[in-house]
Length: 86
Image 1 (cartoon, rainbow, N blue to C red):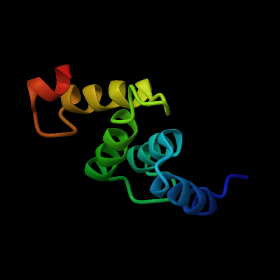
Image 2: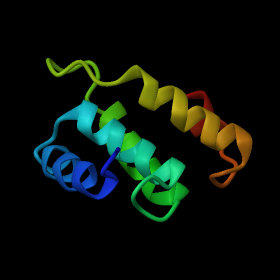
Image 3: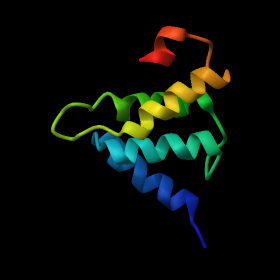
Image 4: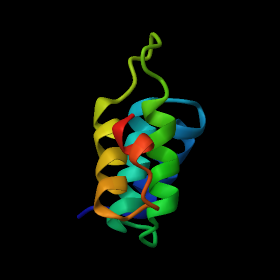
């Protein structure tokens, strides 16, 4: 059994510490509504934070960049062709 609230709590701590994988996972939780209300704006915030680590020594999370592009492309975020491309 998955305890999304417990996962959210610990991922939130890790994401606030700047760990890109935790930031990406938190974005996924908001995107999918797992343990938290579905919220594309907040999901995009965490995806952007995860994606912005690249090319630092933390490596970034390329999946976050793909999710951001998909969110712009699918209309889950206000259309912005430049952001979608980037």
